[in-house]
Amino acid sequence: MRVMVLIALLVAPLAPLWACSCVPEFGPPCQAAWTATAVFTGTVIDIAEPAPPQPQTAGPKPIRTPIYDSSARPLPWPKRIVRMRIGEVLTGVDPGQQEIEIVTGMGAGDCGYSFQAGVDYVIYAYKNSEGRLETGICTRTRPLTQAAEDIAYLRALTQLPATADIRVSVVDNSTWQAGRRPMQRVRTTISGPDGIGEALTDSAGRATFAGLPPGEYTVQWASEGYKSGNRKVQIHAQGCAEVPVTMLLDRRILGRVLTRAGLPAAKVMIEMVPAHPGPNDSPIAQDCAISDLDGHYEFEYPRTGDYYLGVNLDRPPSLENPYARWFFPGTEEPAGATIVHLPETPGVQTFDLILPEPQKDRIVEGVVVWPDGQPARASLPLEDPRWPGWAAFGSTDGDGHFLLHSFDGTLYRLHAVGGDSSISAFSAEPVEIQPSSAPLKLRLILTRPGDSFRQEREQQLRK
Image (cartoon, rainbow, N blue to C red; front, top):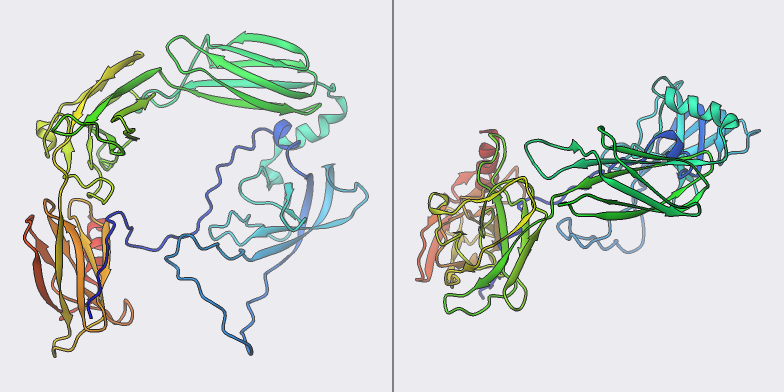
């Protein structure tokens, strides 16, 4: 029996790791205080660690989801319970309450906050799905020694008027090299319960609307030659809302993607890759666009700089994009490519792309065996050496046979790795597969200790 493995060449070699992915955008105390469920100061009395999982002693074994299944719903994170002595209260807690328990994560990628017993904190807590107060590193929660602004606001509340402020700050992010530059004279407007207001940003890129009645407002911004925008914000009495705005020049690159016969090429991914990346930057695409049914593509608001246009410029070919690396106007190497320059001015540039012929399917098959000739169960990473770590994965059947699909115009490096674990792994000597349309048959022998694919990747990362 032989196994046919259909390969998609965009499979990452390592299992995904869950990590904290929040972006702290809680704003100043006058904003964060009114979005939290409870705000108070307190001293940590005790930190209770979660109970270890209990071994299963009876009943059917649970169904285990493979770690590589990205569709699997992650298990709930274990939580710490932090008991605190309450100090000053702004909201969400009975002022007469002496102690409180809040929940936080363990801090290993789950956004948990690392509390220390005996330390004073200002707490911004939110109700979780279980109805308990929870906090983490994505809130303004912090040690009291770092919370002077928070404490000043909490203690000044009784003297503050029942109005609120909206503070707009605008930066120009159209240029990679220059970073975010404050933009002055940007027209900002607000509309809400108090009617309409308008202001121009100052030299620091800021505009403030003060003394507003609480409620929902629409904030808008516009500047000639730039993409305009708007956002809704909610302000609370004695509070504020900071509205950070990033503006981009109104620039576009567009055109059509055509076959050599002049027909529209649909669903082709076109990439923009910096022509002069920094010394520590990889040549990865800064933007991508997919051609529509008529072959039209468009990049909106790209940043100032020099770029290559093309297909598969930063990744191997795939079933969706079965083309060899192709730079506009028609070359596989950047030396012959046209550099597209985007100046620091708005405008539209048009480039029609005539694609090469798509690569054809090529069969690579064979057998993996141990040195004594016995068939081996092995994984087979098939790698395009131009992109280390990007690989397709095939496997052998019970007889050690494998059958892989590749592309006839691409150079590959094929690994075969057998063994029960990474510790006991043995590999065949990696094989370089030259571009060709002829089917290829191989016999791979597991003679090399270790996982050759992982070893080579670690060596590349150390360079």
